[in-house]
Length: 371
Image (cartoon, rainbow, N blue to C red; front, side, top):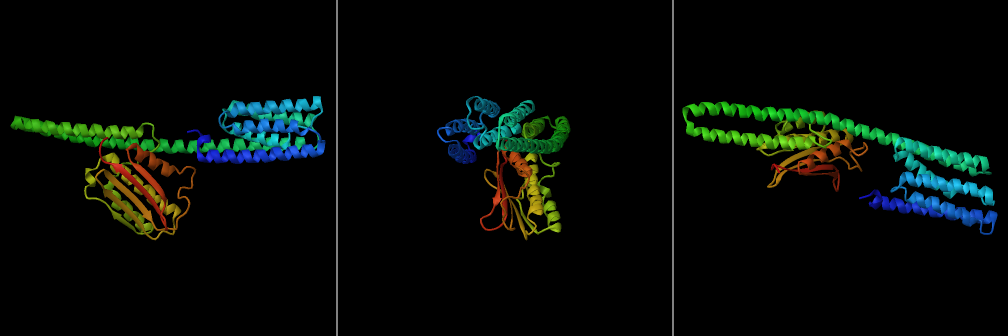
C-alpha cells in the first residue's frame, strides 16, 4: 500500500489541496484587484501547475520538483517578455516549498543538492528581475523548505542508524543464544550416544530404543536451530542471553524490590518449552517491566500472567497506572518493534495499549509447535 493510499495520506493530501486552493484563490484576487482585467489568469495558471505537481510529489518527488522549478523559471522569463504580474506568486512559492522540502528530504544526496541549487537559481532570478515583495517571499520560502528538508533528512538518518544499531546488538545476543541451544542439544546427543554404546554391549536389542531416542533428540535440535536461525535471518530483534522462564520469578522479585509489587502466574511445565519460546517469554516480560519502570512511575501493582492454552502460550503484563497515549516515546518504539518482530517470527501475535479504565497491557500469544 502506498502512503497516498493510507487514510493518513489521503487526509493529508486533502488538507494540502485545500490550502493550495485557498492560496491560489487569494493570489488570483490580489492580482485581479491590482492589475485588473484578465491578468490574474496567468498567475493562477502558474500557481495551479506548481501546486498540482506538489500534490503528486509523493509518487514522483524528484521529477515533480524539477518540473515545478522549470515552470517557475519559465514564468519569470515570460513576465519580462509579456509584461505580466511578477512571479512567483504566494501560491507558486508555497507549491515550490513543498516540492523542494520533500525532495531534499528523500532524494539521493546528489539529486537533493541539485533541487536545492535549482531553487536557489530561481530565487536569484527573482532578485534580478522581480520587484516589491516577490524576491523576499521567494527567498523565505526556499530557505524554509531547504532547512526543513535537511533537518528531516538528518533526523530520518539518525533514526535509521539507531534502529540498525539496536538490531545489530540484539542479533549478537541471538547468536549467543544459538550457541547455547546447539551446545545444549549436542551435549545431550553425545551423552545418549555414549549410553547407547554401553547398552549395545550388554543388550543389543535395547540399542534400537537408544538409537530412537538419539534420533528424536537430533530432530528436536534441528527444529530448535531452524526456528532460532529463522529469528536471526532478516529480523531486527533477539532476546537477551537465554535465561528461560524458570527465571521469571527472579526477574519479577528483582523488579518488586525496586518498584511496585508484581504478581506472577505461570504454568508448571515451563521446562518443556522450546528454548527459543522460553527466551521470548522472558524478553516480553522483561521489556514490559522495564517500560513500566521508565514511563509509569505511579504504578501501584503489576500482574504478569503466563498461561497455557490448546494452541500454545499467552503472556500478559498489566499495570494500574493512569493511562497515557503512548508508553513508547522513542520514534517507532524500538522496544515494542523488537518484541513484535520476534513474536511474529515465531508465528505469534502481540498487542500493546491502554486499558479501558486505567493501566496498560502488553499481551502476546506464542505457539509451542515447531511449525
